[in-house]
Length: 207
Image (cartoon, rainbow, N blue to C red; front, side, top):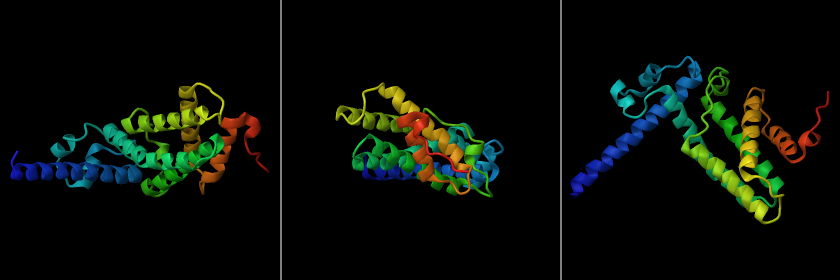
């Protein structure tokens, strides 16, 4: 391939990346302002400056756009999750650190997405099996396996444990986002206590 052809190919790839990012940025704004259920593909397209045909070169529906946004969030969270594993000294410190980091991440995401107090989590579907979200599951599973191999946690079913911890954090996180203000540290303490000790480990509410 000639140098000119390589340059042209590079420009085309840069254009594709820019267009894809423009769609995701527009979708984040539209979903935040209108809510997921109300927003349409046409609303997203209007914010991008792209043609209808150009949009459909990248995504076939708003569901695909939302999955791509979820994938982008998971991709950005993975290094944060790995950093928690590197600094943890035992299972509990990793669990609490990872969950708290996740809650802080989704609070920041919610603030970036939400407009006029409309939270994305109230209406948007949960994207479960995107590649990056599966990679987050694998990261958690790998961290748990390492902790067990070092004798710092009992040996249990890794797939069940990782799935259960992620599900608890996800659902408690959605509830946390509804509170004003959201308490990432308190929610992380609740989840950690529940996972490690059951109901007996959950902080008591003083009324």
